[in-house]
Structures are given as C-alpha cells and as structure tokens.
Image (tube, rainbow over all chains, first blue to last red; front, side, top):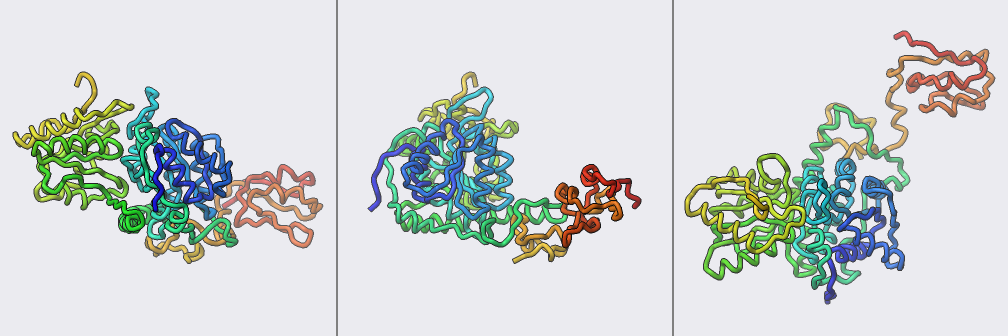
Length: 393
Length: 100
C-alpha cells in the first residue's frame, strides 16, 4: 500500500533523496530550494540515511563535489535555484561532458537582475543546452516521482548523462499538497544501486577529465549528443516500469483533451494545472480545446510533439522565460521547429507569461484561447511573439 | 576496454572512451611532452653531490634517481622550467637556451 502524506514539493524531493539513500549530497542554500538540503540534512543528522552531506561554500563547489563523488562511483545529488544554477554553469557542462550521472533538483526561480526570488523558468531554460536531461513537474507528486526515476535514467549505460528535475519555486516547492509516497523498500528495489563501469575508487587507476585535443573532442561531443538522442527510449522504459509499480503513468508529455482539439496550449510545470482548469471550462461550453503539458524538455520529443499537434489548427506555446533572442521563448522555438516538417502545420504563436513570480490566472489562459480562436476564425496568425500579463502591452 | 595507448585517428566516436576518461595509469610515460621546452637544464656529473635537493622540486618527475644516485634528466618529459637549476647549490645543473 502506498503511503498517503501531505508534503510540500521541496519536502517531497528531500524524501525521494532519502529513499534513494544517496551516497553524497553537496549543497549550498538558495531560496526557494533551501528546504531540500535543509530537510535532507535532518535525515542525515537523525541517521535515516548513510549519506555524506557536504556543506560546501558555493553552488560551483556543490556541483564540483557531486561530479567528483559520481566519478568515485557514488550516487550524488544537489538542489538549487536561479543564481545558484547560474553559478554551477561551468560544472553543468563538466558533469555532462564527463558523463557522470549526477542528479539535481531545480526549484525554478527568476534570474537576477533586478533581483527576484519568485518563480519563472529563466534558470533552467538557460541550462537547456548543457547536456543535461531536463524533466519538468506539474506538482509535488510529479517532482517526487521524477526525482526517484532520475537516477535510473541518468545511470543507464546508454545514457550516462546528468538529470535535472524542475518544479516551480514557491508554487509547488512550498505549497503543501496530498501525495502518495512509495515504501522505502520499493524505492530501494526500483532504484537499485549504481554500478559504474569505472570508478576512481575501483583500485584500477583512472584519469577523469583530461585534456581533449582537437583530434578527439569532436568524437566525445558527438557521443554526448547521441546519448541524449538515445536517452528517450530509456526514459520511456523507466516511466513504464515506474507506472507498473505505482499506477502513475507518465509520458514525454501529457495530452489533455487533445484527441479532437482544434486549439491547444503547450505549457510546462505548475501552470499546466491552471491551463487544464480553463480547458475544462471551455470544453463545458463545447469548445474544442486541449492542453499539451511538456514533461521531458531535454531530450526534446520532436517527432512525438509534431504528431500530437498535427491535427490542431492553432497552437500557443507558453514560455515562463525570456531568452532575449527577439524570436520568442525557448519552448516556442523548439515546438515550432518540431512542427516545421509537418505537411499540414498548425498556426503557432508564443506567449511569454508569469515572469518573476507574476501570478498566472485562469483569465490569462482564457486570453490565450481567445487569441487562438481569432486565428482559427480569420486564418491570420498575426503577431507571433506575444506577452500575457505584462502591463501596457 | 578502450586504452589510451591504442588511441589513433582511425577511431570513430564509438571507439573512444566516454568523456575521454583514461582507464589506466601511467599514460604520461607514453606521451613525449619534452618538445615544448625552450630552455634546457644540463647535469654536470662531476659537481653533483647527490644531495637530492633537485628531484623533489621537479614538477614533471624528470630527474631520475636510482640506487641512491641521481641520473641524467628524462628529456622526454622535462619542460625546462629551471627550478632544479635554482635549487642546486653546487653548480651541478646548467640552464641555457636549447638549440633545436
């Protein structure tokens, strides 16, 4: 029997790390992720885990310590937000390039400046091309489930890439909701133990992170790109196995009322719940609307997204991050690229929303569905790069 | 296992270790890095007291010690930094521009 609990998203992630029984957690506090190592350090102090907790002096050191621990054959994880993730930047690439299966809980928060501690996705979206697998979570349950699955994905021999599990700062990280936890022994059986092919502690000498000259660097970069492509199958296999264990079935994305949808919103993390609520209200009036909630953003599910949107007339892609490209947000750019090869493409627009913790309300999604209705009726896409919820626009 | 001694330019992406990890020890012995050198030290055997001030300061372990005596430099790995020349109190090490 699963355990019924009520936990915040941060506590749920800390419990997942406890049940995985990490070998090493190295972490530095930053709002709103601080509670993850805070709860976890209590588990360490109380003897619930055998984990070595390293109270490092910065996020740069946190990720460095995790990479080193993973290179020693350990399961290592950390948690961070916003500027903490930014300070890890150099090491994010080192982790994926060294091919060590570090896992990370990202509690999404806006990047400075101006300084802001509230939620948007500018932190993890900036790290989208760092060779990390990225999975997004709508609520505390998904954050917990994704974190447990993350070690199995990262450590698979066909993957060997680090994984970050993202959830919305404060909105899900601090809100307490009902949750179903697995029993400790079930998590232990599901996650098993990390069996690395090499390790700094194996007794055989190993050099990690050597100079890679022009004659070899390109091959290693290609290996990493291939691992990201190949990880999709592993991710789906792990999701399926987890589904059999828990009854909670996950895909690369969730299609909500998409079968006959003419208008669709693509969204990730907590706002998907609000989008579904508005979708339900419009469905009750007979409108053919749907929501596509992205879960796995890296690797990007290109063919699957294209197929899911192939029958839709108009799509709005929601981005909780500006990337200052003058083209639109990062999710939009990828979704639109995915749809390019379709014979009959939907009309696609982008909405930047909810930056720096700006409240995202049902009315915002109503605005978006109405805009899509206008596009369907007139056949004109109009302005592609749009904003909702910002004053004066 | 893929070993560094087998590294060659015919290897495709499947044939190189993930992340470039080197799965064996002592591989620097197989790579000649002494050709970076601009300055070169010389051992003046008749002045050498075998006091061993020099070999611990060599960053590249290029001063060979065998059976309690120092031997000539390992020029395959000496970078010509001159630290050994600085520490020698007996003028047993010279240091000059290398003719190549």
